[in-house]
Every structure is written in C-alpha cells, then in structure tokens.
Length: 128
Image (tube, rainbow, N blue to C red; front, side, top):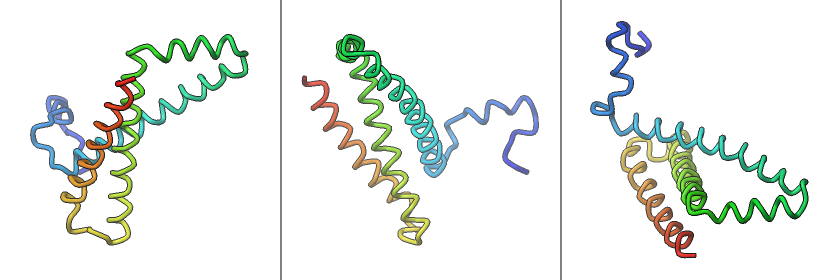
C-alpha cells in the first residue's frame, strides 16, 4: 500500500515523531522550510508593494520592521534559507551519484553548517 494508515484509529501515526528515521526528518524539514520560504516570498512581494504607495508608507513599514518580533521572524527566514538550501545541495549531490551511500553523514554535516551559519547570523542580527 501507500503508507497511508488504513484504519481511522491509526491516523495518529502520521504525527508520531518517535519512530521516524533521519531521512524522514530531512524530507519533512525540506518541505516545511520550502513552504515557509514560499509564504515569505508572497509576504515580501506585498511589502515591496509599499514602495509604490510612497515614502510615508514605506517609512512606516521600516519602523514596523524594527520590532523585535519581526527581527525574530527574519531570523526564521534566514534559518529556513540555510536549511532548505543546504539540504537541497545534499539532495542534488546524491542525485548525481555523489555521496549516495553517505546520505546520513551528508545531512548531518550540512545541517551542522546551517546551524553554525544561523547562530552567526542570529548574533549579528540581534546585536543591533
């Protein structure tokens, strides 16, 4: 079958993280970050539309963007970009036959690089 729970009572297994393998986590992480970045793209385009409304509207947005909640949201966008991008590089490498037998190790290395980059950017972004 397709992996879809056949009994209605087994639906919880879809959301049970306990028995997932690292490959499943990599897939889920890639999908979530991809959806998040797509949502951000639409929000970004809407905010760029503020430019067309004149300097006052744009200045108001810039003042709003300095809110700490927005800064943390921007950090999430940066984090999603690093995670999604580096996971995508891992997928591309294995698709071309590079490191196919070492996908776990590649995932851990790339996610370690992403974590280091996220921490670096968090320090830089939130220090101002």
